[in-house]
Image (cartoon, rainbow, N blue to C red; front, side, top):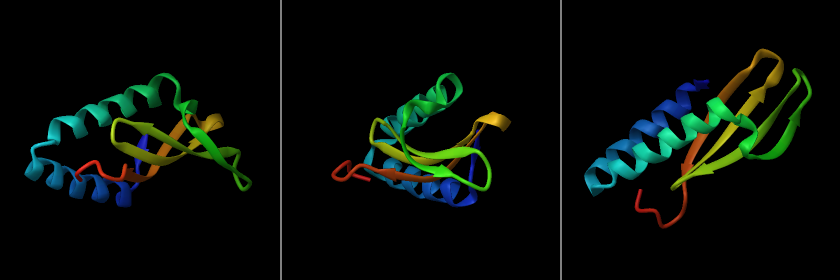
Length: 92
């Protein structure tokens, strides 16, 4: 599994906000849940786009207060997280 640079930057920003609001534990739990799902069954999300240049799909998945857009390239057994977001009204 790979997190894009933009995804890592967004997660750092969210982590700083979570730390300030006392909700860092919730964010860590959501990230751990995502990591587990990506390892065990990365197709857990909702498919939204079939890729054409290379066989794969873009999906949306949720864990806790996080929503992530990610790509699966099954032939390469690769998951790329591109856009982590938080659910509205989650306090982040």
